[in-house]
Length: 468
Image 1 (cartoon, one colour):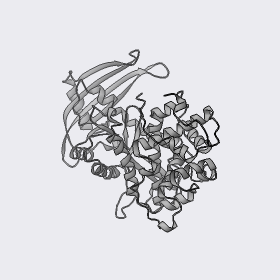
Image 2 (cartoon, one colour):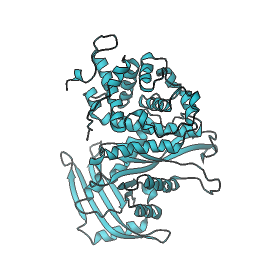
Image 3 (spheres, rainbow, N blue to C red):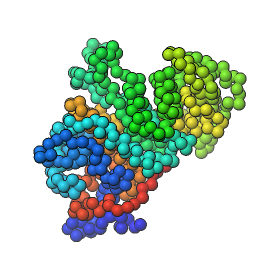
Image 4 (cartoon, helix red, strand yellow):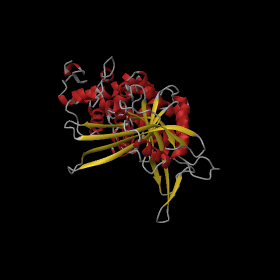
């Protein structure tokens, strides 16, 4: 299709658009079209979130408040205050908001904070889960399943908020070397990851001191047990493979995965689980067939040496026996300085590795765990989403903003990797932060009637993803 046919050619004044205006129309079409194509639109995303407000006193529909929060993250404004500075009072911005929600003005950041205080967090979590469920049902992530069957879910914790004074009664505490106390709120995230770079929030468990009778603080392990139970209940038949770091290498994790029918690839260092490491080394000496060498890269500059062993018996601290496998990969490749260096990767798993699957399990499975750190946490902290900013001091509202950030990040990734965006910017935009800049500029500057704006993303179209 010719690019001049992709978007309307005329502004409300009847003047022909220049290339900048067409570009702005295309990126708005890419974002709102993506949301509608996969989720039925932004308003429908939050249809299941109950509104506790008095209907007679409502100025802004709840979906409008939710959209404003999501749009704050999409445009990477960095704080609620910037809603007032960048969105409110701009006629073209507010006309688009009116086209979507029938209200003439965009809500103030304080209106969001007030409206979010009484929401049910389970409803917000369900909104995130429904997004993932929709992508799975539409087979969007189908091609990136491990061994053409298992969806990869990386689970890890990260810091969210830190305070020098107690924020709430549920804060975790840490004594610092200078004698002061740090109060903080970490979270444990389960993110669905893929080889092409998706890191999509699937479920969140907040780590906090909820039990007044507990002798120890809440921690990632305790949170993992709660998260695993919720994950199984919400996605009971979904074939999952968990990607975990060495913190979770223990009997309770293995037992849960066995009970829930999940596969796992857990990072195993030489110092973890000594009995397993010792038996692995001993058995490898008498099983020379369980080895494989591969040369990868355009010039065969990467060498991978694999060893593996299955049916290793492991008895945990509770006396329960587990049958596990160990997979090891020694990768040698040129460093940035030109010298060759070797890195060891080793995993504990309940897959049965073979000469046919070891490379797939390593390169398309275990090594994707780092994506929760890079494409996930790092992108949300340092890529413009400002995960560690306190968007609210209120306990519930702060968590609602966290869930909205996860919704925004899912939409942002779908936009960035989708063909609608590549059509809008065939030469790219450089850094990913520039996508947020172009979204904000288009929202603030493109003049459109209500009909013209809605026509951008009404209708049917295809979205294809970059698989690189």
